[in-house]
Amino acid sequence: MQPTPLTQPAAHSDTKTPATSYALKVGLFGIGLDAYWPQFDGLQARLQGYLSQLATTMQRPDVDIVNLGLIDTPEKAMLAGHQFRQADVDIIFLYVTTYALSSTVLPVVRRAKVPVIVLNLAPEPAIDYTWFNALGDRTRMTGEWLAYCSACPVPEIASVFKRSNIPFYQVTGMLRNDPLAWTEIDEWIEAARVANIMAHNRLGLMGNYYGGMLDIYANLTLHSATFGGHIEMVEVDQLSALRQLVSDEEIQQRVALFTETFEVQPDCPAAELKRAARTSVALDRLVAELNLGSMAYYYKGTGNRDAGPTPNEDTMSSVILGSSLLTARGIPVAGEYEVKNVQAMKIMDAFGVGGSFTEYYAMDFTTDVVLMGHDGPGHIAIAEGKTKVRPLQVYHGKVGNGLSVEMSVKQGLVTLLSVVETIDGKLQLLLAEGESVAGPILEIGNTNSRYRFPIGARQFVNDWNSHGPAHHCAVGVGHMSGKLKKLGKLLDVEVIQVC
Image (cartoon, rainbow, N blue to C red):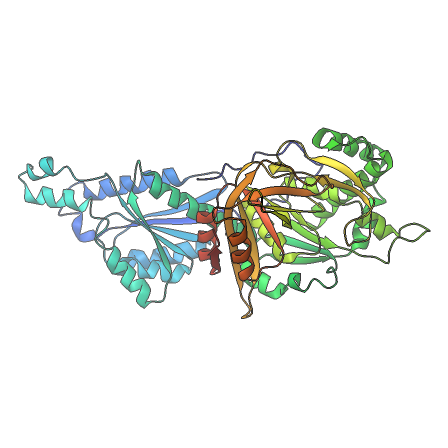
């Protein structure tokens, strides 16, 4: 089942989500054989019509289709390779319209050096054999057959790609009225769009690691090499300084936004709401100044003394509400300086399905579910109902107090995603599909939900842990395995599905 992309949440701030100027560029070309055109009247125009239909159906917002038309000679293929490279395409769709020589394909893909999807799409479910055999004109019959001949050259093309060490992927089906084929095409485009977002994302890292959590320490060079983008080191002092510039009017406006967006509990002190509001406005300005698309943070400080917290401690103990607003509008924020997991959160959010920070909380063997959640920011755009705001006197295992959010992920299908670093210096995507189900949660001011998995709670926990992920993961709505596996192909990253 395909997830429904999230609508824009109601919680807007005074700065916009960082926008990339690098729209996804999809290369498209069809192939044919120039020797056919004088032999079979109308065949070339017919195939060009099919290619135009394909290009029209592939159109979508924020995606540029670079359509080079029908390539039918090696010379045109060489030129097309240069054109795709000059156009800076991110992915190529090769539409096999009829038999064509592999020499019209290899120069294109070899020069462009981007992933290629081979589209073996017939114009109709089947040839009308009775009508076809009654034509009586064998030249016309051959031309008609060639219009249905998309499957013919695919083995030749595959052989050449294999012998040239060029990865390729296939979609086999029909040009029209084929949900299976078009789901595959849509997933490839979506996966390429997310890969493009990750390649241009600016990830801010503020503070330092939570000491002793050895599983969350990350190889930043590996992340840059695998996903692309830029990692910006951010000082907590920068955010603290921005807090001092926030006006009383801005604080009042942000408190009003809090009460509109969240279900603020009666025991939340007004002073804490104002403190969180000041930090929220400063966070928006920090994100805008640095053009961040995601962020991970943690700051311990020296502890809350009787004299009161330091400015940085005051800042970092009041970030949760503002970070939750950022997360809901496409700038995911992870606590505990969890680089790997904020990457997973960004991937899920880029697919439009959320990506909330989570970890194991407990197991419920009575109902065969796993309780999962986390303190800190939550993806309030995928909450079941309105997210509550509660005051906390202490965070478990951490210095600080203030306001926190309590929410459950929407009931229905969900996907868990973890970015895993392996012993051989690579990244993996680890995923599991399950369901968020109704039932009691722990009302402790944290995000937490009840998840049921088709293999059962015991087997899920054992299988998930066996792959050695960090103890955090990102949760999104809908079942996402198809798109995530394609993203892994595009990034050359292994994808492991537990269930």
